[in-house]
Amino acid sequence: MIRAIIFGATGYTGLELIRILSGHPDVCVIGGSSRTWANTKASEVLVYLPQDKDFPLVGIDELIQTREADLAFLALPHGDSASVARRLLEKGIKVIDLSADFRLKDLGTYESWYGNHKDPDLLASAVYGLPEIHRQEIKKAELVANPGCYPSTVVLGLAPIINLPEFETTCVIADSKSGISGAGRGAKLNTSFCEAGEGFKPYGVVGHRHIPEMEQELSLLAGRSVKVRFTPHLIPISRGMVSTIYVRTRSGVQPEMLRQAYRDFYRNEPFVRVLDGGVFPDTVKVRGSNFAHISFEIDARTDYGIIMVAIDNLVKGASGCAVQNMNIMFNLEETLALTGLSLFP
Ligand SMILES: NC(=O)c1ccc[n+]([C@@H]2O[C@H](COP(=O)([O-])OP(=O)(O)OC[C@H]3O[C@@H](n4cnc5c(N)ncnc54)[C@H](OP(=O)(O)O)[C@@H]3O)[C@@H](O)[C@H]2O)c1
Image 1 (cartoon, rainbow, N blue to C red):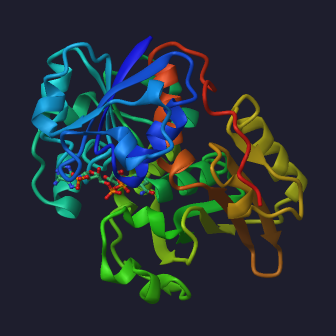
Image 2: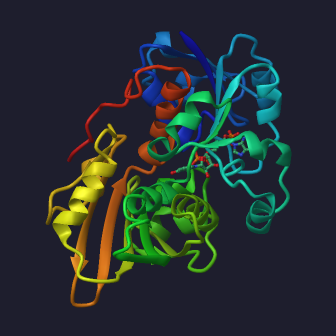
């Protein structure tokens, strides 16, 4: 039995980890951290948590002292994970960090987007945890940097075609929409009901912090520099995300050839579905599930390929992917606790 601890257990991704892990046959959560609910029990925050799945909530320093843990999930704001990870790794505890602290390989890039890094020496050993791209490295990793939700959609959407000569991928355009849970659980004016409950708005139009992560992974896949023109939007749903990606095509691309390329690339992937022609991804069809749904169209009139990807930001975009990474790191069946279908309708 893997004994897991969750830092930031009372935030949206922490709560989602508890939900998914409660159905995992080989994992037991033995502790969590929260400043607000320290010295209580998880069942006080999650009243429906069964007694046999309950665990204590403590402060961060106390949780680090947990002797028996095998694995720690860090569901903390970025900046806070970096000051915790080393202390866990030194105790032989594997770490899956859901924040952005270890996603970027290059320190200069990290610091130009996020400011000073609290433990830059760990960057080199962290593995970017998108299983469809880095499964072999994840198997051997002690520290996994779980991907951001937007980057997961954009990288999964473009990976099969980034090297095809029919596409011009020097600079791609990604237009993404996210449910409000993507902003975390803390109260903020711009995500409060009256401000966001019935509206639909772009934000971070120039310079969203997920851009360097997308560019790092796409450039690695392509073996050359790839830039992303990225515009995120907030939509009035609690969870779910769709990215619509525009790529220039060089010549008459045949949709059937393209569908085959996507199907071949994701042939053995348990959580990526390439949809049939004319079927478009929809957040309600992935809600609560670890699946990414991908489809595309070719617009021959304008010479654009349009790739559409939907995920649940809290599952494939965060905690589900983290559990998938855990399964890989601990040599378990990769799909354990993750095969539930979407909560539709
Ligand atoms: N939400 C998403 O869709 C999503 C997707 C992918 C990745 N992520 C990343 O995952 C991480 C967690 O996101 P989230 O949405 O779960 O955030 P959240 O809902 O705001 O939860 C944050 C958690 O960390 C604790 N916390 C907050 N500030 C802290 C601090 N300074 N020191 C220690 N603990 C602190 C909070 O509890 P207390 O305040 O009680 O301590 C809470 O348990 C973030 O880095 C986020 O970028 C989120």
